[in-house]
Image (cartoon, rainbow, N blue to C red; front, side, top):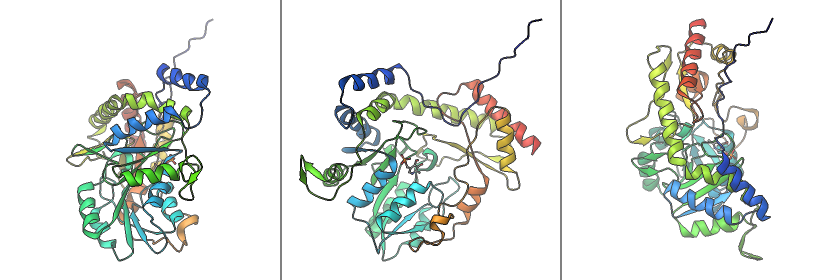
Length: 374
Ligand SMILES: Cc1ncc(COP(=O)(O)O)c(C=O)c1O
């Protein structure tokens, strides 16, 4: 007797890089050129980054974390100063602030998951040097309000735009409000495997950033400062370039997927779907819902996983609430009740451009089953 195999639907991952023949060909071109380190591909990548952010300059670096380090370094932010950021973020945000020698203060977030400008205002004091908004999940923070605060108090803005390639506020791209820091890590909306870039309109800052990433060299063996090796490779740039050329399409597909998810699960009373404030162009790095209080998130995630749907929890705790930071002298454990609540209730669903309508229906269905069972 012949066994009958029912086809198993492939697992739906929380992220899946979309790399095709264009990437393969460009990487091959780099490999065959023999020029692997920072070179002409990085230049091409940087030109695409200026288009993405709408800035005069973009400086490619090895990853998003050192983009933040570099931004703080060129702004000369350091000891005896404070930087205000969100507690609902990845460790890289506060690691960079702490490495600079500055102290970190945490403003609460709003229901859209981005930093609340009123809460920021309440923390501004004589030591405040910068605000570091995080455009979490691809949604820009309220940049109009934050820019007003920054200009009223003479503060720098460093945007953690790691998750927000081509997001905008009323048509103005993130990364152009302050010094922009992007990540091109493997799971990001555009990836180079590992990679980052810093965007700015300020030519002086750009010149210093270029030197800083390359051992402090202004020109060959002319050292203007104590620098780093934060360079991106041409191989990494070649992976990202074709995706950057299709960035509008990537964003369009993520927006379509998010709209579809919203219509599929929008009426479920046990979840709150993400809210996009007027004027903000979300690029849907993550589609993050809030489960009603009392729902067991681990059980929901396990049930969805058993139906072949991966989910993510970004982030399961306040960023400072870990051994490395709890007793750190430069970490102020500011009270941020909404952020704390979101850490307990958030669940991210797959929204990446590799998903078909059928996949998204499977995501919604798996969520539905999980909620019925919980
Ligand atoms: C909010 C945020 N900031 C910073 C980073 C750091 O970027 P990278 O992983 O490229 O160093 C990431 C990504 O991992 C991130 O999600």
